[in-house]
Image (cartoon, rainbow, N blue to C red; front, side, top):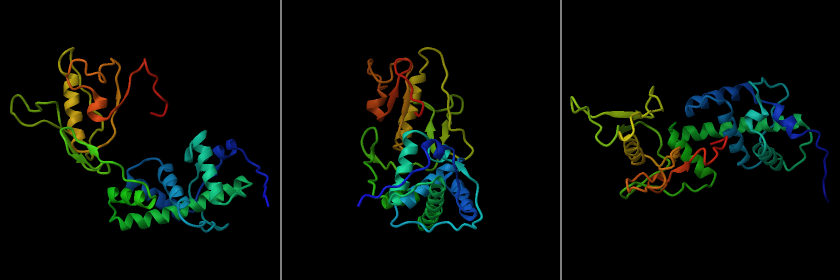
Length: 266
């Protein structure tokens, strides 16, 4: 027997709707913002909802008299376009269909949000409150492969999951103070440090050579993905045999504007 139901909302309604969970869970959502080092409330919320959707059975519904936490707009929580449609499809599919009203949808999302945070909190504690171990556990729970380890230049491999902690990056190939001979290092990913670095100099002064040396030092410590904006068009050619072929050397994705357009979501 084919079951049909009348849907009384559109994707525009979902994008503009207010989604929220109970006040206690919302506090745990804020706690996960601190644990993961993120500033947007929707990031742990998405993670929690996805975690609950991947679990068996349905979450317990939120009671009518619950104390509510802060709301997040649908287009912020789920995105827009295909992303919004995918999230909506997952929630409806998990419910076995039958989601006809926007209020029913917000209730389902709030229940998944709460259950997901509870599951994440348990897994955080089981991971000894260590971010890398926590991520590994989520990957294992999801049944996803951890991925192939990245290859270091010159041989050997590095675990792509190990991305936390400081990385002392030599400034160029020499990286020593000309007066004191003391080593010069840029502390990347360190507390209180800037995530940005600029290398400036005249034509032929060695800017690209220094940058490539720094990238090589980073790659020796982590398999974090590289994205290169190549305005001159010479970082992916290695035409002079100088080792600047970033795609081959580091597995970088190269964008060359204006010859190649830059996507809005890089």
